[in-house]
Length: 144
Image 1 (cartoon, rainbow, N blue to C red):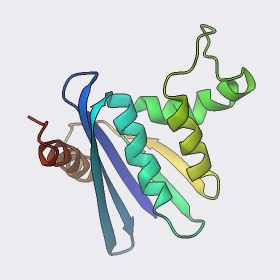
Image 2: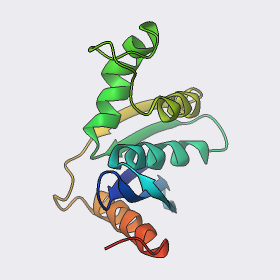
Image 3: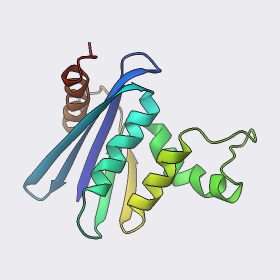
Image 4: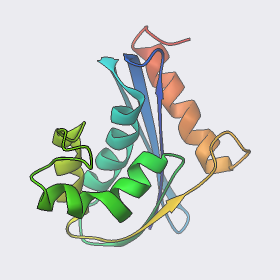
């Protein structure tokens, strides 16, 4: 199972959209959504969360995103944040804790390989997710 995900924001904060592509063999499913007032990081997180929450049973999953925030968060930072009572290295509250906790719950039943991919560099699935996120902005009447 492969998941590709991207978020977009018009202003930061501002209106935002997210898009995800799920692929299992030849089967694909696209997901997208938007929020009127959000940040780009929240949209990046929601794209991955919603994709993982849509899975019906435990899977071996590769999650590919251009968000180093999401990848580093899950690979490097999250266990320390939890251990430190959701405080970052500056002893401040972790931003987007609600979504990080939701992502942990969504990821819990799966074996996940977190992969960072360069955004806006011609990666077909990343470009598709970016288009989904931008289209979601337009559907909400808030996008460029």
